[in-house]
Length: 123
Image (cartoon, rainbow, N blue to C red; front, side, top):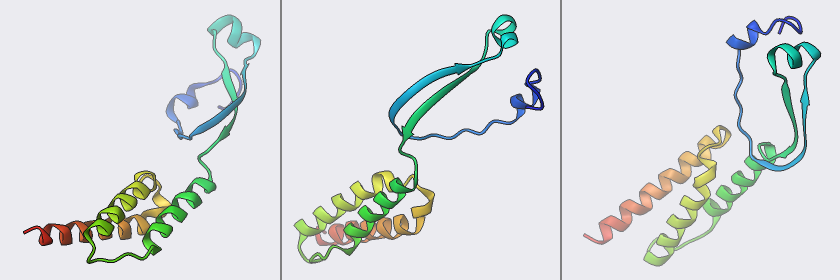
C-alpha cells in the first residue's frame, strides 16, 4: 500500500503461499478507526509455528536418500516389491518440493525400472 487510506495497489499484487501449520499460538486483529467504522475491515494476524521450512526439505531428502541407498537383491521379487512401496512412500511428499527434483527423478526412474523388470518376469 502507498498509505493507510489507499488499498488500491493491494488489489493488483497478491502473493500466495501455503504452509503446514503445526500450532496456532495467537490470533489478533489490527485495524485503525476508519477501517473499523467505515469499511468493517482489518488485518488478521496469526502467530503460528509453521512446518514449511528448510527442515521439511531436509527430512524428505533424508527419506529419499535412505531408501535409495538401501541395498536390495534385484532378483528377489519380494524385496523389489518392498522397495517399490518404500520409494513411492518417500516420493509422496518429496514430489511437491521443487528443490528435490533431481532426487525425485532418480527415484521415479528406479520405480519405473523395477516395475518394468517385474512385468518382464511375469510374461
